[in-house]
Length: 186
Image (cartoon, rainbow, N blue to C red; front, side):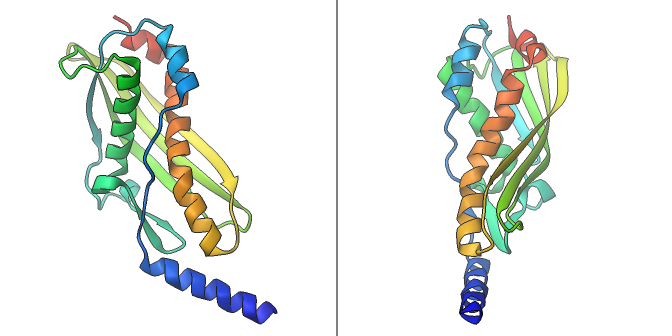
């Protein structure tokens, strides 16, 4: 029986090594957005988030040897689009606004190497620029844990589905920061 389980595990790992997994679509955290609606935010533009190159280390994630990619090849762009989605929900997104948010993805990983637990990590240097002057700059971090498995056939899809939650967790920490809220108010 143990030999059979070991063979099935090896087969599952080998099969996932050939596949490429794509990050699921982001969906906003509506309780966070509802809290932000009471903050009377000004119009906000979203600058380009970096790094864009699919070859940048933060844009290269593997889940037990299987490539895990963002739509468009950049997790920085994924985060940018998530923020854009949230600002659209808030009805404050304006590409011509004097206030602009920029960011650099510093750390980004989903780790499914554990036997029972997986983890997500993200660090982002976020800046708020008003009329050409940086008024707020801070490194925000997010850490998530999720149930995983020794079996790659279970761990890899769970890691894949965890990524939007990692991004939501990071954005929740940004939106809860009074200094950020002050920086994006008119």
